[in-house]
Amino acid sequence: MSRARITQTLSSMTLFKSLNPKELELLAMVMNEQIISRGDTICVEGEPGSCCYFIAQGVVEVRVRVDDDNDRLLATLREGQLFGHLSLVDSGPRTATCVAVTTSRLFVLERDDFETLFSSGTRFAFKFQDMIARTAAQQLRLANDRLALMLSRESPQTDKKALSDLRELLARTDTNLEVEVVYPDGHTWKG
Image 1: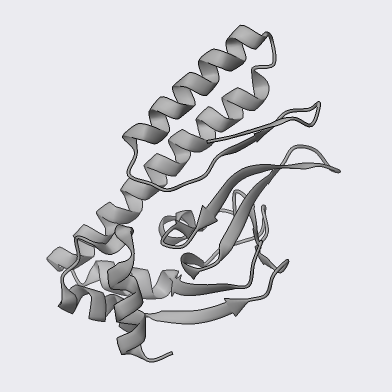
Image 2 (image 1 turned 60 degrees about the vertical axis):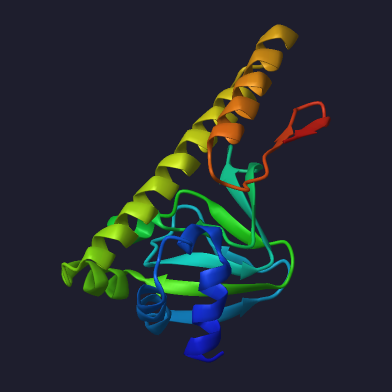
């Protein structure tokens, strides 16, 4: 895909609405496109990470390991969202496994390119880092709430309160993250 098409796709993503055309072009210059087939694993929990992914097209599931034999769906991400961004700021292991639910077109930003952008000291570098940090904070809050909900199987009243709190949090965030709660007995809730 040409840099102009990457720039055009980035400009349509809600995450990048605050960037001007020159900033979008700069970002497009350091991103690479990857096509991931349906069912393919993109990154694995516990393995080292060196890049983040922006979903240009497709659906990606974020799963966390519960024990040696089981994992849980934490989130379903769609077009315009990103994942793997913690690897841009630290060299720790991946915190989740991400799998393509559909054939997906992703833009990949390597840590080295992110560091080059950031070390430039430009206004754009700080603006972009702020965007990454805010997205990480939103997703961390959602993940914490999702985890608390999964662990709060004490009573139906607790579940109702947790669902209400989760709905409120989703309404306050500027994200199109779909949350699916899968209970141990198999029933689900989506919001």
